[in-house]
Length: 242
Image 1 (cartoon, rainbow, N blue to C red):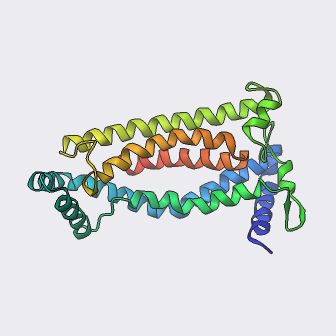
Image 2: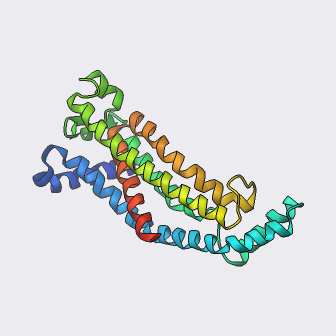
């Protein structure tokens, strides 16, 4: 049995268990449950990433001292900052690991709901829906079948609204973080190792707005994974960084 066949069976079994509560949207609920399970698996890494971010923030005064000391030698500055991070066991990119580890789960869902057959048999999961929208469909299909405010189109309106709200929260939180880094002596435009954490902080929230495009073009099942995961991330960050 292939990985895709095994995963399809898992989703179908979960949908059967959830059917009394969610009826025709049981498979969609199963995807949300699967997403929550994946996020629980990577939660220890998210906690480690939060600790790393706090540690990087604590190092900013020392980074500012290095900037002053090596202000005329960017190469020595970058090397000194990297050595400082290594000595304190702080990675500038540790926050990216939880997102990277979720990619296999996303691509698994994408492939599963983009294939008409699984293991030589018809893909019965494509018959499942989230309210009026097929889990294997895309926003373009919803637009062709009733328009933006049609039955299927309204499902995407809801997903876009949640994604935009989460992206806005991420953006505002990142701006506060960048402002804090600037107050500690690390300019927003600093290049190289000294400004790497700040640069990542600026780019990541903008990528959140890019998920609006992803939600529109991937199968609805994969879009549901994205929306659930990004909402989870927003709540997780609020708890871990308070």
